[in-house]
Length: 222
Image (cartoon, rainbow, N blue to C red; front, side, top):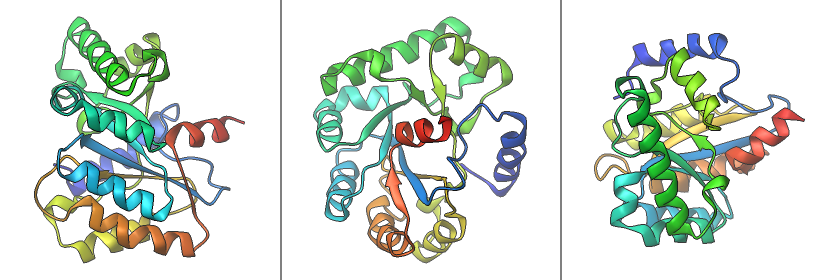
């Protein structure tokens, strides 16, 4: 669970680990909308429908064991033009895994996603750590293995609170270069599809463009 204390910790970590993608270029009115903990057999298709309705591309960080259950949804995400990313295999914090176990689980998850989507595993480099928990050592290992860690600056606990609270949090946190996290892998609480349906038109009306994490990183590095 993401608590107010953790949010303060993340704010401190942004200054300590600038090599991690927390936000994009603050001079660009663009936002990376991301989804964690999928694919979910009910929620993911609904999210894809709403994104298609509004012409928005997003980034999905997937859990390996769930990819095994619904691989066709991974292919659907890819064919809809969205970016695929690696979340984990079992949603265990990276620092709690020994080095070899972490490496094997990342590789296994990457191969599962690549096979389901029909793409090369080399196309999958962006990783989001479960609960956003990583250490300096974790970051070094990910870099050594060729992965890029992606965090966020907005992660409302929408599965624990009313829709109106989440909408307000997203709108208040949406700045140029924001990375927003929603969850399409929770079958309870306020569903991600309802949030997207409200906030995307609002943010578009403010002149924001929605991009994938890969696009945001490339533009930031130029």
